[in-house]
Length: 558
Ligand SMILES: Nc1ncnc2c1ncn2[C@@H]1O[C@H](COP(=O)(O)OP(=O)(O)OP(=O)(O)O)[C@@H](O)[C@H]1O
Image (cartoon, rainbow, N blue to C red; front, side, top):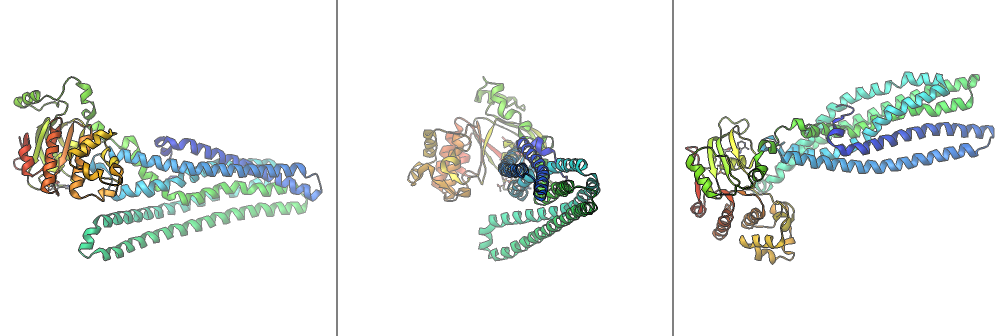
């Protein structure tokens, strides 16, 4: 773990200003504290000698007030900066991950840990540790310089003892890194396991295995607790060690000053100022040690987060991979979807360069990472406006084919041309939010269009009858809707999306005959203006198809 990772300032520009402000305030606080040492010494000497107290009192009071003010401002900026940075990191992570193919995205547990606790742990790193680091680099040399001017023998003691603090801190830091990594791993295990259990809870309950999970989660939690306690123990011990070292060093300065005072070789004002100044050479370094422990998690998380965010480490941007996806219409504004062109193209039998709204695959191979056999091998496909239904035996790669067309999986070989697609998976995403928010996820839509889409899928009456209508809240994963209602809702969402190509994976799975007929009508309507590729075995949908693609053995036929 590096004491400072400059990548954060580059990758998250939002950190620059608050960190600079906090560092500036830290240095100002240091200077004010050094000033307080002088003022306090002058005040004590004035009291002892019965001199006028007004000036030293005013200086001391004023400097204490400035320090309090700086402290308050620094706390406010730190709290704000921490939240801003964590939020920006979270946004950037989600943005980068969503642009990657499925195979290049982090595993669920890693993504969860990084986007929640990981980004949260960066808060103290940015808001406390980095500013402390700047203070530690500026204030001690300043204090030592003042000491050299005021009382060089005391400065000599400080110069000889101060390097011991960073040395100790570095030794402790090496052990902390190992501990923090272990703790971080155990946290990821805990999150991942908990996520799996939550997902599989209905199955576990139905097989009577839920109780066992309580024990397993207990064991994983205990591992995390032990790792946390080890880290805390180390943090307290190292803080105590640094404290002891600094205290002994200041005590040496005080003893030497005391001896010189008794022999009369120094004045009270000089001695007192030296004793009050000496701690200022140590406390910023001690503070770095303390903040280092609370920021260690953040530094470890930051390392992983920045590796994901650095542009050069993300060469597989989906937009780069599919440059035609968004620009096709712009490139050929006059080439509207034209079935004749498509027929001609097909008649020529060549691998066509896609027309807008046309999906074309040429010699596409795809294997899952680590798999021995390719799921898709030499797949050629042209699908133009209308309904193309893909069938084939279970496991032959139909879902994979849709994901490759959608660009969320990168083919090992071959070419794909496709405009932007709207993919409806077998487990479509329905987030916690209102029905309206879930329907308009692809972009804003007029209320009349939303109701028209709902009417088309036969959900308008059911939704209008709800107390809050279209603004009714929906639970996570569509909680509160039946399987058939979910299937129709996501189809209404596809109707509202502006994408010229709609990919549907088993759109009639888990629905009754009546819903299947409504869904079939909607798909036919959708296919009148767009390219619809549906994976389905439903005879009614196959009968409605303009083109039927059989995937499997042989690879693909048209
Ligand atoms: N994430 C994955 N990692 C490794 N192999 C996978 C993964 N997902 C699917 N497969 C394998 O790839 C093959 C094709 O899967 P795919 O889901 O595309 O088939 P499918 O034709 O849609 O099946 P079904 O009709 O049963 O839904 C299967 O043998 C499956 O085991």
